[in-house]
Amino acid sequence: MLRSGQADYHGKEDDSVMFEFFPAEMLRASPKPRIYNTHFTPQGLPKQTFDKKCKILFLQRNPKDVLVSMLPFLQGHKFLDSTIKWNEFISKYMEFEVESSLLNWFYYTREWYEFLKEGHDNIYCLSYEDMKEDPVREITKLATFLKVEDNRDLFKDIAVKCSFQNLKQAVTLKVDTSSNSNKEAAKKITNLTYRKGEVGDWKNYFTVAVNEQFDALYAKKMTGIDFKYRYSN
Image (cartoon, rainbow, N blue to C red; front, side):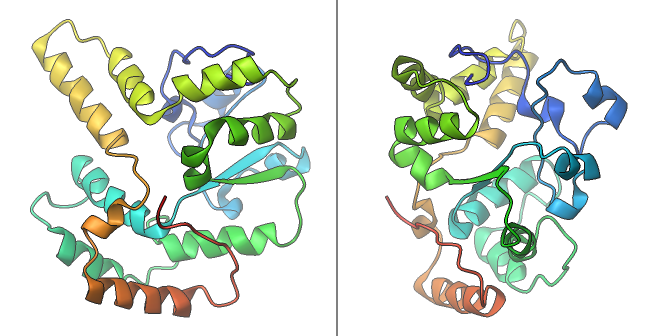
């Protein structure tokens, strides 16, 4: 929306331009300026990304809310058995030691931290919680990074269009719902991608004991990493 100068939804979902899903030839076919999406660590990105100093937006969210959202997402995509309950999931996750997996939040975040501390003026870091708190403020900052002309009316329109509920509705509308089966598909896609979007929903899932265990694990895994996260509004 910032690049086009209009608060209009894109015709396709963001996963239509994900590095993980498509060969380079298909991604190159998209019109310039090309905007891609990915969950890769820096090491997984094409070398040209850095040689050409492509602008990168690095978005983070506090890990507790990430994990609460991760379970239904993985189950919905059948990566995990649908019968697994939250308590079992979080216990197993805290034992997770695979250092090459993108599902390992600690590994993923450390990889980005080590890369970012080298200094990269073409990378802009932003947080989900800040976007939720004051979207116009954060959109304005992002526009400055992208060298988009200051346009407060546009930024306000984008903030409205990109609110959680409006995005959730927009996703449903992108699916042809002329049949009952398609309506169910649209509902499933929407619920997988947009669950609640709240800051601090983890408090409804983490027990006191689990929270203490997770905080201890975080302190161990993230020693020397000074990313700061907000866990409530």
